Image 1 (cartoon, rainbow, N blue to C red):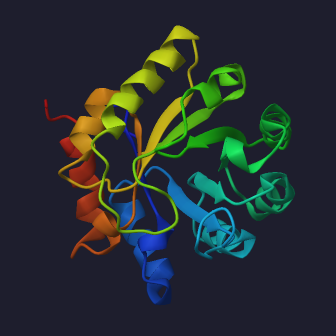
Image 2: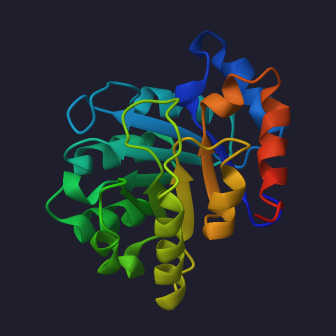
Length: 223
């Protein structure tokens, strides 16, 4: 990590036939975390990875593996993901009845616990559990598919999320995910985000390692 920014390439955008090669490339470019989107076809209209992918990535690297659970009943995934080697586990408050209980269970397994908010999910869903959060994820697209366009209205929500964390004395990360590119990352950083998930922007570029470095550099640009 440099200049207080974490870049987390999303494996959803990778060429899975060259996974090890591409992971090594982004790590060489300075990637801080690796991001894994877990979708169950119920909470979002798509199916993706599970604990096996996390375990495969863990065999390739020691960097933190950031797992985003876009699933119903995320409590069923805590133990398998912890055993597979996940470092951060984030879920959506609408997906479970007892949000604080799941956050506590994640932390009890030694993982960082995060809460994710869809574009239409109010920040109020996180307010009562700020003290239990190691990370707050503001979705900057509607989840379910990669390659979507950043929603500009998210910047104001990021500002409010940062104010919430600061106001409660939280040292949690403020992550954004969706449509993060060279053109959008600076505004998200200026709004208060410090951790950035990018899939297509990194893995579809000619030089993924260089793209990681460039995204980080763009966070230094004044907007």
